[in-house]
Length: 170
Image (cartoon, rainbow, N blue to C red; front, side):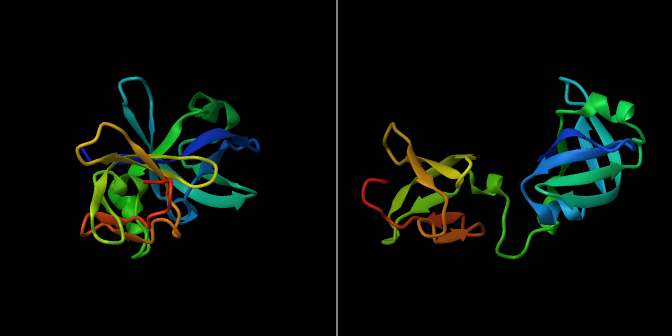
C-alpha cells in the first residue's frame, strides 16, 4: 500500500454544499489535489475522496469533494487530517523543494564539513521549523532553527545539511 502523508486538516464547513474549510501548509500541493484520503477510524481505514474544486480564502483552502454534498455529510469528518500519496506530494514540489519528513535521517555538518550529528525529528512551530539533531557519541539533542541563514545547504540526494555555526547553538 502506498505511503501517505498529511497535507491539511478539515477545520469546518464553508457554506451549505459541504465544502470543507481546510488548514494547510503548502498551497502548491493543495491547489493540484485530485484524490485524497481521510482515515475513518483508529485502525486507519483509508476512505478515498475525489476533489472537484479547490479555492483559497484568507489562510484556508476551500475544497469540494465529489462524495460530499451537504454540511451533514461533511460533519463526521470535521477535525480529521487530509492525506495524499507521498508521490503525489513530491510531484508538486519544485526542484529545490522537499518534504519536511525527508530531512529525518540526514547528517548535519558544520561549515568545515565536520559531522555534528543526525537529524532525528523536525518540530513545527509558529516561526521556523526546528531541526532536532542527535550529536555523534553524545547523549543530548541539539535544536537548530530551520532558517536559510542558519541552514544554508540542504542536499537530500547526498543526505546532508550544512549548519552555519552560531555561538551558543552547537
